[in-house]
Amino acid sequence: MVRVEIYSKKDCCLCDKVKELVNKVGLEVPFSYKEVDIADNEELLRKYERDIPLVFINGKKAFKFRVDEVEFRKKLRIELIKSSLSRMWSKKSVEQKRVF
Image 1 (tube, helix red, strand yellow):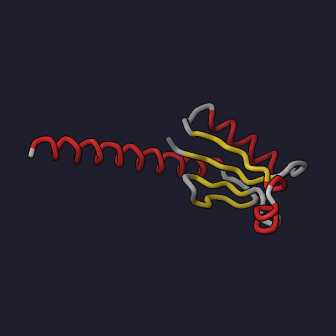
Image 2: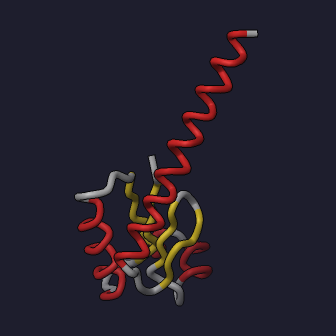
């Protein structure tokens, strides 16, 4: 499963727009979703206060400030394909080990 995290804080209009777009895409493309309010963590607040919203896909920073819907969908698809290939490769490796 692809993981999407948004670093944001309350009363941030850019953050609200990004969350809305991510939720819209989430109705069509499967991924797990987590919002991180940086105001709840002093270290995150210091580190990202001027960089929100930030969107991470599978732990990698994918977007800062704004999210392009087409590019977001593309990045999600790439990660879905990677995870599917990884599962297939792992399964194939286990099956080959059983043969020997």
